[in-house]
Length: 60
Image 1: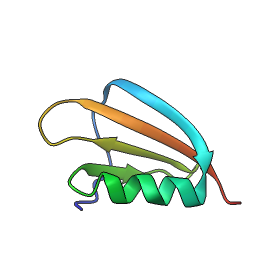
Image 2: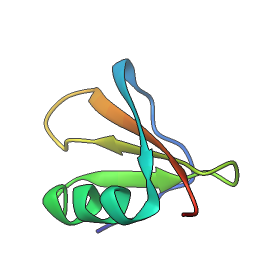
Image 3: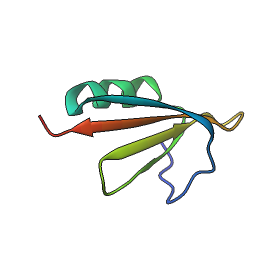
Image 4: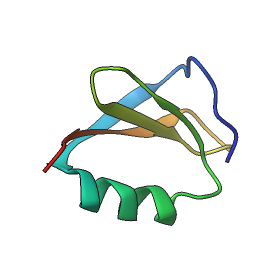
């Protein structure tokens, strides 16, 4: 994965989950650019277009 500081997102899909599930989703999106924010939200974006998924997770 390529880690970037900022991604332009078009119509993000927001998912709220636990950290373990978020890590599983990260593995599913291994070919996507992603950015991880300090407040626990991870944003994913496919390389082909601007659609992305925001994953908000808790530490449990």
